[in-house]
Image (cartoon, rainbow, N blue to C red):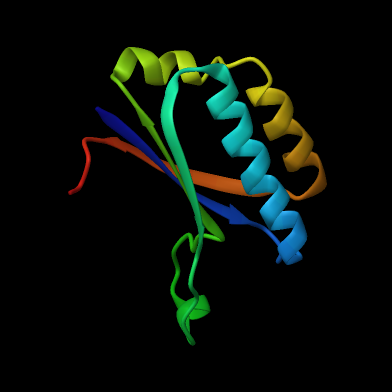
Length: 105
């Protein structure tokens, strides 16, 4: 089992409804492709002063669980995935950092 953990950082704050829709769109397209065993999304929980830290601070976290690296590679070519990404990037630019890893617990 492999987990693909993404830290998504939007350039500008999003209204809650927009962030909810982004997370729902990503979850839907990954699950619909059939390669993901599960998709879990969460919002970042900010703390005072973190904006002064020179690091990518996530807006949200997306964790996709797949069977193996082959399934993960196929997930990157999922129908509709790049359309969802392009649509959101054009409306609300964001950056993504990620790590592929075995389950942490």
